[in-house]
Amino acid sequence: MRIKITQTKSYIGSKQNHRDTLRTLGLKRLNDSVVREARPEVVGMVHTVRHLVTVEEVD
Image 1 (tube, one colour):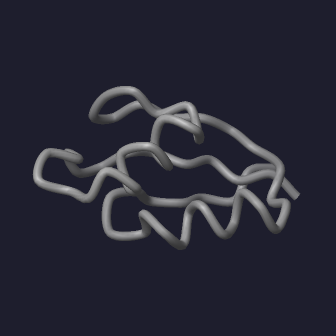
Image 2 (image 1 turned 30 degrees about the vertical axis):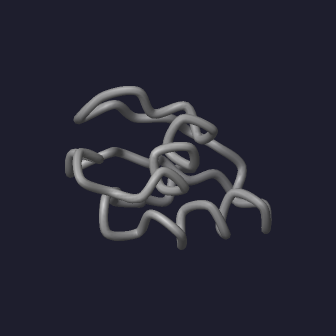
């Protein structure tokens, strides 16, 4: 299964850990989107920044 991750909120004022997680996911700026496999590592990173992103399932 693949998921589309879109950054919907700014990371300004967030913890450094959250900024690093967004960068690791491949999100650089607001409204950036990436498609990743829904592996446990990726799901964990999305859970860390769930207040900054939206997630959709992609076929």
